[in-house]
Image 1: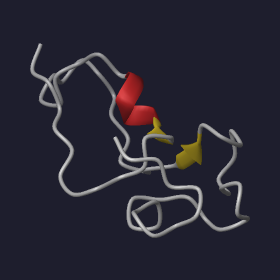
Image 2: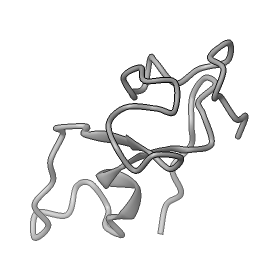
Image 3: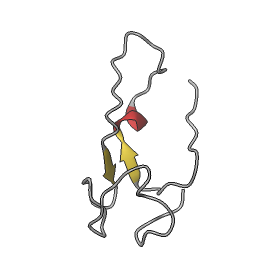
Length: 69
């Protein structure tokens, strides 16, 4: 299985559904979604512990709850 790489700096606690799908993206038998619904492992919600939105661009260094990968 091909591993995914993270580009840029993201929070260790940022999660999204695609992280848990064990399939190659090109596999036509697997339905994929690009809805990119994110959640935080601190809160298990779409808001971080600081009450701010969770997301690819939001969960970066400089945010109080940020944990480096």
